Image 1 (tube, helix red, strand yellow):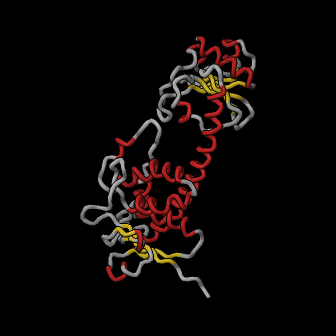
Image 2 (tube, one colour):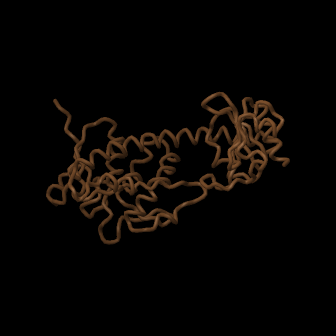
Image 3 (cartoon, helix red, strand yellow):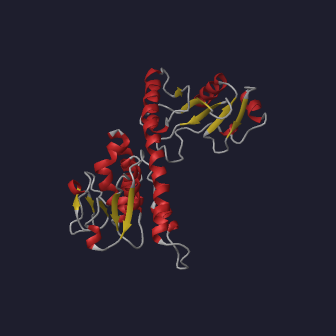
Amino acid sequence: MEEKKIRIVTHSGTFHADELLAVAALELYFDGKPYEVIRTRDSEIIATGDFVIDVGAIYDPATNRFDHHQHGGAGARENGIPYSAFGLVWKHYGEIICGSKEVAHAIDEQIGYPVDMGDNGIDYYGLVRIDVEPLILQFIVAMFRPTWKGEATHDARFMELVKFLRRMLELTIVVERNKLEGGIIVEEAYQKTEDKRIIVLDGPYPWQGILAAHPEPLYIVKPKSQNGFWEVECVRDNPYGFANRKDLPEAWAGKFDGELAAVTGLPDSVFCHNRRYIAVTETKESALKLAIMACDA
């Protein structure tokens, strides 16, 4: 006997990031169970939904109703950012989907905040913080909407976007899980390092946010993943900005093909970016020497 499809009902007409992401999140939550999406504003059809998203003027997680358009909305986070459909669904199912409260919260900060702010008419450009780079999905969603020439239907584009956003959420969960795990390795390296101006890592771990939270590090020495070379990279107070705590020396800027070796005296030094935020060597030993030279410059 064929398994009955779970019925998700959302509004018809122009689609938005919040209900699209909510459906994508529920698809992950269903974990392969069949479902269907009905886009309508017919109250009788809305009442038949197993999950009702962004329509119906009811927020009641006990009955899987996740709308925020009713008078007074559907509440707000502790930081004051109000919920839209995605935030409400993620609030109740995010941790289950991710298997981690920390990962679910990180995704809410990066994706949930700007989506919910945009859908509630709040300026999300003020959201940018030193430790979070918001993902503004509204612009991608808008690109999928049919134009006035009617080259596709909203319903067809809606389901096309659900697949895209489901995959994006899937990958974001993996990234955040690995970031937490790698962050522990970076923090341990920092704690064990005597001269904390230079932190040496043995892998391409996500170090930017961890080291930005500590005042001493100026440079990170780590292997390049592509070719076995090593690199020195500048640490920044804001990992999403471009202001280095200390630039690499001016004399190294834009040097390559033997030029950097001539300036530094290290035969296997390969390249320094013109913006002086990264330099490459063939060996770990030379990368460490470059970092020491840069500290003392």
